[in-house]
Image (cartoon, rainbow, N blue to C red; front, side, top):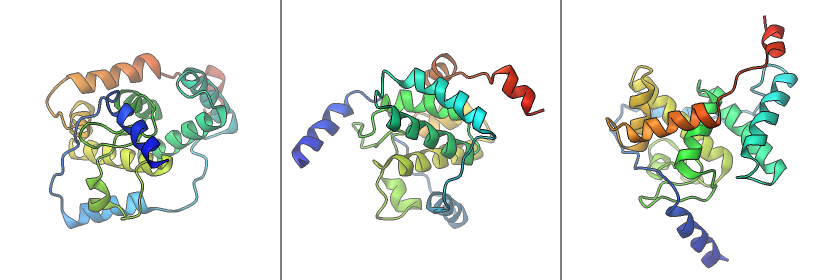
Length: 203
């Protein structure tokens, strides 16, 4: 069984586009804040404003993701988790979907040549820096929690500059290729305009 898992991980490594998030020294207060963010174990509540909004967004995104993840129950669980963790971190859920597409092609057990893991291709050093020793970056919610927390951290460092934040996330700061790929996936594959009837209900 372990041999089979290793072969699956090895085959996934060649398909991912992850770079290498780089460790950067940070103050004790920032490390504590990041640790608190990833360790928050409060029960997840819906990140959607209404049940109608949830049904529309999940239905639309599920349709787009179906070819990559055929299992509907798992697909919906992934989408709910992405929406929750992205919203919790103050990120656009569609941006996170675009990042996952580029980073791992929606492969849960993807491992890059430099060791980045899971959907959002998180480098293992983050567990030592801000997490807990028992955290698994192949766990769906753990991986999304780390990835969204890290991207939020980089956005804060870069004062909201998404281009530079994405560069830091990928370990390619200053180079346009990765940010451009994520933006293209975000806009072309995962762009979402809330239906007029839902927008009117929120007014």
